[in-house]
Image (cartoon, rainbow, N blue to C red; front, top):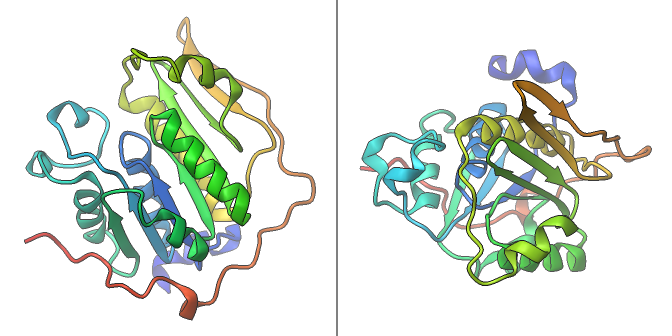
Length: 230
């Protein structure tokens, strides 16, 4: 198809099903990039509604305020690529069943409890797991829940620091590279801005790791994907 001609030489895997956990500042951009790339199926998980204070990070118009994030994002993305199957989920109840038909899990939620739950399920099922986060002027991606976030976020009263769209979109783009090639980094990778300079952590590709085979189409989710909002 002419739409994807220029990305064909890049060995991008479009025939896969991806779960995005959290449709906020990072998850929304990751879903947008994957939709443009033509990934076959996206499962979008988020239990919150779109708030006005979200709009400094999400690529959503003001008309979506008050609507469930997952369904609002799915409806928005459907306008850009009607070939992608988009399934919004308002809670995580269905995740343990859906993980059986998912090839890759991109975790963008901002709560430690939900990340730990998804990590445990992925460990049990062998699904590829990539965690992405952003705070302030920094962002990170990791093949597992990073140890450095556990002590703070697990404590009562923990408050997230401010963040803007730059780190969110930047780290989402980096994460999407791994999803599209069905790989994961071998250690945590961080980017940030300090004294007006971009800072990058060292990282490396998995040693000889090949993209795994995706599940057959008949094993994918049978329910109907989202249609545009009326």
